[in-house]
Structures are given as C-alpha cells and as structure tokens.
Image 1: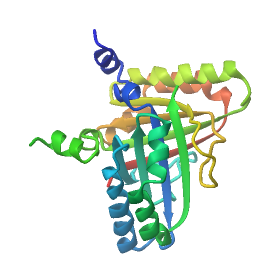
Image 2: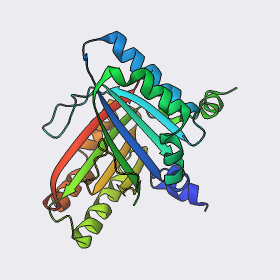
Image 3: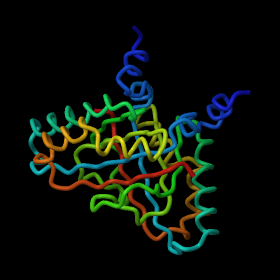
Image 4: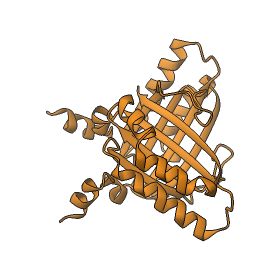
Length: 120
Length: 120
C-alpha cells in the first residue's frame, strides 16, 4: 500500500506529506457591505496562485454553517495556501506578485489575521 | 484538458471543486507548556478523520515562520477539514466520533476559534 493510499483510507490528505506547511489568512474589509471591494479582494487573492511555491490555494467567503459561540463569521475573505516547506512560504512573502497584491489591495482591508501551521 | 489539470496548472487545488467547504479550527491549550496535553489533543483531533463526511483532515502545530504583527502564533493545535458540502459539516458536528472527541478532549483547551469558509 502506498503512503497516498493509506492516507486516503484514513481521510487524511496525501498533501499532508507533500505540502505540510499551511498558511491561513483571514481578511476583514474596511467596507464590509461593499460587494465591489469584496470582488476586488477575491480577485487579488486569486492572483497569488501564480507564485511558484504556492502549491494549493483555496479562496473562500463565510460559509452558512450553524451560528455557534466559537464560530467567528465576522471576516470577509479567507486565503488558504499549502507550501512544500517554510522556505516556500518565505519566497511567497517577498515575491513580486505578493507585493503587488498588497500594494493593490491593502487599502481594502481593515484587519488581517494569519495562522501558520505545520503538519503535526 | 480536465478541470483537475486546469486547476493544477494554476496552483488552485482540484479539491476546491470537490470539497469546497473548509472548516478551520484553532485550539489554545489550558496548559500550553504541557507536551502531554498537546499530544492528547493532537491524537484526539486525528480521530476525526474516521468520520465519513471528513474528506481531508490536516492537523497542525505552529510553524516557525517569520514573526510579524499579523501572525497569531499563540495557539497550539490547528484542525483543518474539507467537506463536500455544508450538510457534510452538519453531519460531522453531531457525529458520535466528534462528540466523543469533545467529551475526551475539551478539558484540554481554554479557547477555540472556528472559521467556516466556502469556495469563492
């Protein structure tokens, strides 16, 4: 049985092995009611997929799950990126496309929170 | 060209299409210095992969990325789950294995934050 098959049987992603560094970013808009600002930020985040070290990019908005005390649904856009290693994330941070994104889009957000995880 | 190939060429995961609902959970330990509590919580989170609607589970700890103002590295364990749909996440919430996890492990954490996203 390959590692991938074993992982799949357990519902653990084989990407855990390939891309163990996970960069979670949540953005809060300055104008949370502006559909235009939301669209601009979503489009901006999507440009990050072109960075070579970005192995997977998932761009999201708040899902309509049950409202519970522990659920934070005050944010607007989520960016979830898988990297092969911490060096890949370092490359991303200073990559021209990332700097361009910050230049073009940072006026749109009021707050950002980042969680950087590595496979346990 | 299949959707998967197109997605891969853009570094966008094909799982965006298959598993668009993303459940991000961050846990803060009551005893952040206890390696034993950390190990127990990690083991507990890993049992969630057996729930049928959990399509991918990624379990993490804080990565050693650059310290920046926007990076929250005060948490201890991250749980990242991909679901096919919101119904899959509803099933997970009330699944016996999830309730068992909460019963066995909730004494270990002081705080939990959940972000539920859907592909934008």
